[in-house]
Image (tube, rainbow, N blue to C red):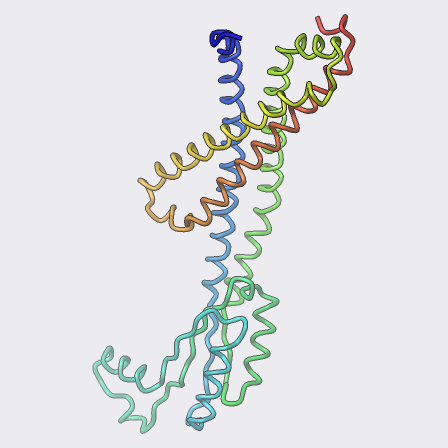
Length: 290
């Protein structure tokens, strides 16, 4: 076979480019849905962690009891980070701000030692924080545990009102994207339906007929996934020019996972849609293909 015979025709090149563009646009939509969902998840976690927990200790508590209580709080499974604010330092700061010594006037330090706790995202729910409050109040030396239950309740109420409509909208877009991709691949296979039937009539095994088409669908899917990933990165870079904090959550690991997801979805949809389309034409009679 000559080298010129191996070269793809103009129609084949046009079909391949059209298919890749169509699949890339579909995967771009899916990639944007994944990106928006990830940003929404991070936004929820950050909002939850704004509901800090403050633990007030008893005044004039024994130093050993205080040290033990601080260590128990610091190592609590629901605590991500902690900061201890001792009463004397807080009183000195307050006196500097007021310009007078109220400690001399009162004869004692009116403030209590406080530990400011930043909880893990998993522990920043109303149920988890209620359990943590009860657990911490049982620690010897602890006077009171305070957290912003109203703020967290408002956050959870807002999330519940938004999450299901957004999930429904995302599913609609996802189904539309899958249908568009499937239709694009079916049109590509349709253009070569006579080749499929001719191979079948000369006795080619169905698996031998499917093989080249499935390999082509795999290649198209991988290329489209790569193009979609590059497009999502481009959109993120443009958004970064307006808001520099947008790219902070997108670590190399997150971007790698997004690339793997788009390549995997592209390969899966490309192979699956191609297999369905080829099987459809394998089952048709020759006189119905025109």
